[in-house]
Length: 118
Length: 118
Image (cartoon, rainbow over all chains, first blue to last red; front, side, top):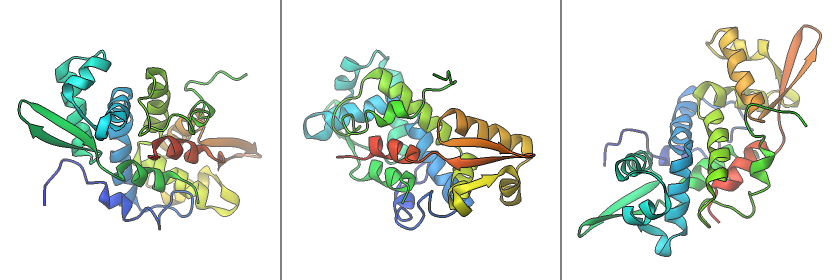
């Protein structure tokens, strides 16, 4: 098991079917977990990174693909990528000189499932 | 037309069917709008307020209902309520001495729809 800075999204998805926000008052600890995931997403640059990665061929992109499309420095993009990896939205694989990022399947749906009213 | 601090969620829902994050790279201005809505949600107290309001009888609650369940001061709760009203998640109706808050139908689904992978 990897230790990450934030709780992995699986903690949310486990509750997605039983703890929709609009069905019953959520427990304080679930609110903390969901807020952490939403904070990781609540940034325009990070939302654009997710959508660029997801729309890329094979849903995988390297930092070079992102610097081409975002008007941000490489260290800034690397910071945003780290936040998204730590929050469980992206995974990182190193091949040669480049790191490649892909969307964790189901990770956005997990958050969407909790938010959606039943 | 009302001028609000943040863009209303209808701006997001209009794009929910065509601009899923995982389908195509979203435009910078859409990323800004979605990030603002997610920021309004990305707080444990605000998530709990939404779920308490939604789970309450007739999906409507007054501040007194919230102070009973949250260990927060009334001014702090009022601040969180204002953020959620400004972001288009809650509406406020004043009856007598109390203000009553209810969930804007479809507002959470609008955000969920954009996040969900297609």
